[in-house]
Image 1 (cartoon, one colour):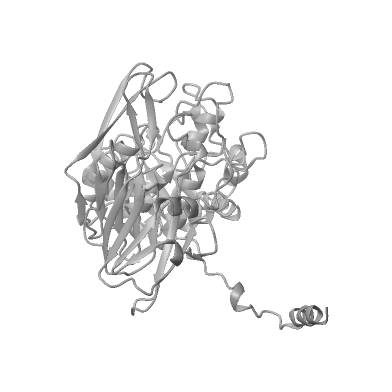
Image 2 (spheres, one colour):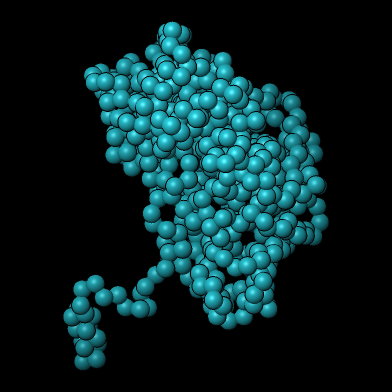
Length: 509
C-alpha cells in the first residue's frame, strides 16, 4: 500500500507539461490544413434536397440551405474533420435570380443571399459571405462560373468585365473558380485569357477548367468532368490518363482534378472535387437516389474515403502534370447492366462497358507487379510525390455477366512495387493479399510505424511485417485492420493507412 501511495504522489507532484516518454504519440498526418486545391461542390446536394425535380435544382442554391439548421440544410456543417482543407464551391446559380437565369453575372444574388447581398459594394458583399464561410471552418468560398459573361453586360469587353470581377474576388478572399459550361466552354484561347487575367488580378484564386484537353498545359486545375458513380473508377482513370500525359507550360500549376474519386486523387497526385454528401439513402420524395445509387460501392456511405484522401494531401499534395507517367498497355474492362434509377445519364436496361489501364504510376515509379490466384485483378495505381512521399492504391471492379449477376469487389492480389530510394512516408489504400515494397537500401534494423490516416497516433508494427534484405512485406490482413481502425461506424470505405520507415540508414522518416 505504501508503494502505491508513493507512486500516486509522484504522479500528482510531477511538473505540469512533462510528458512521460512512454505516453508520447507520433502522428504521421500533419495537424496543419493542406494547401491542395480540393473542394466540396454543392451541385448534388442541391439536387438531393429537391429530389432532382426537373428544372428545379437551381432553386436550392440559397443562403438558408448553406447556413440554416432545418432538415437538409446546414451544408456548411459537412465534413467537419477536413473542411479546413477544402474550398466550399457554390455551384450553378449562386449569381442569378430564381427566374432570370442570365448566367455569368458573377455577383452575389440578393434573392438567394439576402443577408450578405443587401448592402455594400460588390466586393464587400462577396467578402461578407467569404468571412461567414471561413467562420464555419472552411478554407474559403468558391463559385461555379459560366463560360461567358451575362447578356446584361454585353457592352463591356471580356477583359473589362473579368478584370473587375477578379479584382472583387481578390479583395473578398475567394479561393476558387469552377469555370464550366457556356458560350466559350470549349474555347481554349478564351480560357487561357481568363487564366492570365486571374493570375494578374487575383493571384490567390485557383481557376479550374474543363471540357477541352488543350487547356491542361496552362490551367491551374483541369477537371475530368461529370461521371456516373457506378462506372466512375474506369472512366475516371481513363480521363486522368489523358490529362497526366500532358506537360505543363512554364509557371503553370496544371493539376488534374479527378472529381469525386478521392482515392484516385490521393494515389495519382490529383486534386479532389467532392460531390458526395452526408444525406444518404433515398431522396426526400422516397425515390432511390439515382446519382448515388445504393449499389456497388454505395458511395454516400464512403465518406471516410473522402476524409482519408484529403488528409493524405497534407502529406502528398497534388502535383502538376509533367509527362512523367507509366501507363500499362493492358486495359481492364468493367461492365454494368443498369437497373432503374441507377444512373443520372444511363437508362434502365442498358449496358455500360468501360476500359482503363490496369496499372498507372507517376513520379518515376515503375509499374508494380500484380498477381492474383485466378480471375480478374484490381486496378493498381501509385505515385511518388515531388516531396518524396509515395502512395499506392488498389481499386475495385464492376463486372456483370448477366442483368441479374452483377458484382463489385476488389480482387485480392499479391502486389510488388519498387520504391527506389526511401524518401518519405508511404500511403496505402485499398485491399491486398500482400504488398511487397522494395527499396535501394537495406530494411534490416528498421522500425515500421503505421496508423489509419483518420487516426492521430502511430503504432509500431515492426513485428507484424516481414523484412528481408531491401524488402518490406505487409500482409493484406494487416493493411485492412490498420487502415480501417478509426473508421466511422457503418462507413463502407476501403482501408487507408500510412507507414513511416526509420532506422539505421541516413534517411530518417
